[in-house]
Length: 419
Image 1: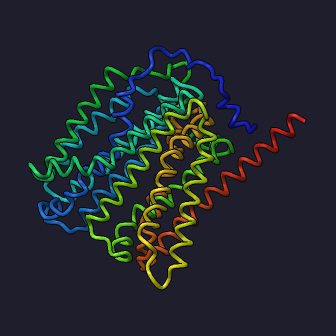
Image 2 (image 1 turned 90 degrees about the horizontal axis):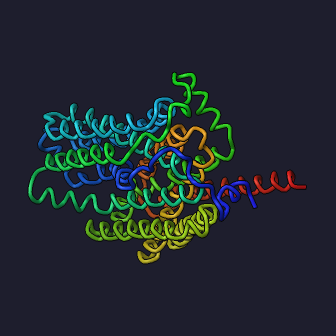
């Protein structure tokens, strides 16, 4: 049994005695609103560009700015919460999100919109990192893994329901109504945090502040293989997945001839597969533990992507069968639905001593990796299934090899110590 397996043995210790636990509803709102803030107004981008008299590229930049802000917010605020506590930072982030949603709703230029979206993403990222740290403060072992499963399931539902909510809002108003809706969500977040998120990191357990201390904590975690490995594995996996996110629309419509409606249905089914897998993870994790479930998830998602490569390349010069492509992509997203919460739980457990910093690195670095690889399919210039599948396979296979190598190394160390 590896050291990580032992961390998630069938028996577990009760959560640290740090007062009452946070409300699950509050945690869901704080950590799950980021995805909703990006996906709800996707359909409104053309109308936004026309309203602000700007280009489609500038309208798209409002989305990119929010995503970048989420990555930066996690990396900056997570470590700070280890020094200054959780509650005040969560409340500040929810208030900032609300105010910036109003600024977006009233924006009269692309410049104001882009700046507001960057800061809004920063507030979302802060909530995600600190919310994950709160879980580590109040839950341990498989109970923590189960809570991460709950939060992941909700965050994965947002991309499915977000466009639908946006469609309803746009049917009765313009794009500004979407941001008034997000402002209302921000108010709900703030109220939920005030009522349901107590301070979970007492002053006696906080760490020194300052840039040097933050850097030393980050360096300490990244030197620790038990923490570093799941972060690398998730960064590689995110890179492969974001190639699908960034390239699948053009590839499947241009190479396979799908209509926009067909693609929307395919994407929705795949997203539902991811959500279903994350729910299954939540139901099974207390019995099997996150290590076993991550192992299964890595096998499923890697096999699916490698199968897609094989099918698409052997079909050349013709098109690969749509049904096979669809099944492979659905299996890949289903694997991710179980991989994301299990890998996050493993990383957070390994970084428990600096929970905020661990949440920042474990969430921010994979997010940055994904953002950097999103345009890879387009950069190549050939919008085909084999090109997209090959790029995805490279990163998914690298993630699987890294996970297997680390597991074997861990077993060798344990056997050596027990000999």
